Image 1 (cartoon, rainbow, N blue to C red):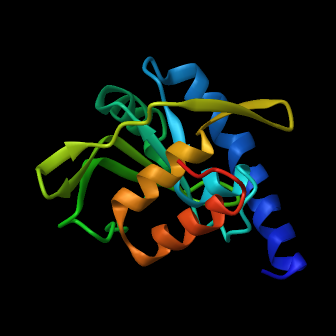
Image 2 (cartoon, helix red, strand yellow):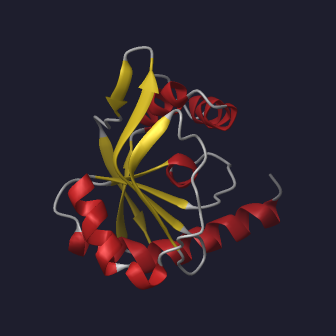
Length: 164
């Protein structure tokens, strides 16, 4: 990734984090964490971040949907419905869209299973406490998703020394 793309990605990520993370701390009653490209970026992987993926409980996803209803993007349909299901909503924020997945489940060999994050760390981003899975947890989850983009992110994270 070129230096200019990385700088643009980080600027957009900081902007959306500044707008969304205080609300996550304020309105979520259960644990939440970022996943996907934003979490990988915050762990140090050189990835382009297209959105902010937030894993929450169903209850907190419903609370956020009510709080952010004016930002909701009802035209977006997430891909992969055959593999993923959740209480999903996409919201338009400065910098990047925010995608909330309440009670995310993954369909695999054993049917629908909840996506669980067993180890979370806090990353300081401009004074904000941002919750992300440990590198090893990110690798485990990305590999379980199995899509090419997820496997590529897992490989980048492994280079950081996060072998599970």
